[in-house]
Image (cartoon, rainbow, N blue to C red):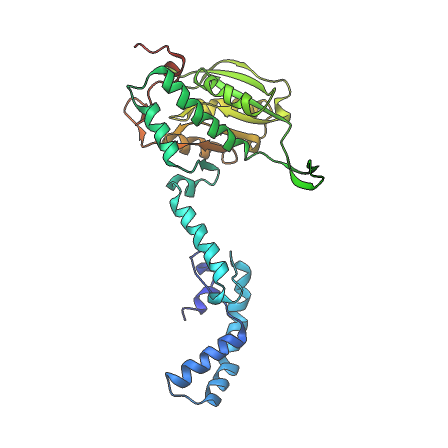
Length: 314
């Protein structure tokens, strides 16, 4: 009854692990089990198999294979396939919970180097020089990771040894858009990675109107034909990001052509952006705990623009 349950359409949304062995293997296992453990003779086992077991499998189980996400040839004996699945599951379990909800959210894999840099830029006692130095390092990692999500074309080149190397060609139609002013801190890393890239500007008033008042915009005239890297180091409530992305879409940029790059993201902001724009990609280096009563990201790193450009009160 348990096996036949998967033939029911209502049960197909449930999670089943099925290792389908070859018919000969299944029959051999049945004969060994029934003769050794149940004391039955081979003739009775074969008669039951041919009259009931095999027809039931052909009528109910075999047709459901088309609904399977993964089919493992040779079943449990296929150790290579099982090992690949186990590695994939371990990778998924190691991701932040939000990545399991939103497949368009990408968090850079954490290392001791990345954690160390986060520790320094989050420390309120870190000097401006060190803050800028380590923030730039993190920003460069985020930008490089974001560029990896752009489309590419295959390209062959001849190496100095006369050999053929098959690689890829970078996306040519690309531009950046920084959200003034914190987003401007990410421009140097983008220019270092993409020589001669065009960068537009968006200024959004973050107070008094729920962070959604557009003050200024200057964008490339052909932005609708480009992939856009939206730059803002902090994703907090998500209101400013929604306004910026809405402007880009209004200018003709396809939603799927937008990659939003930031250093840290609050879960509330991720929810807001991903629910409004499920086809954009968000690339960040760390997911925060959340927002406090003043809608500031916690643990956070303070006012990023002031600390980066040296205009904080201290």
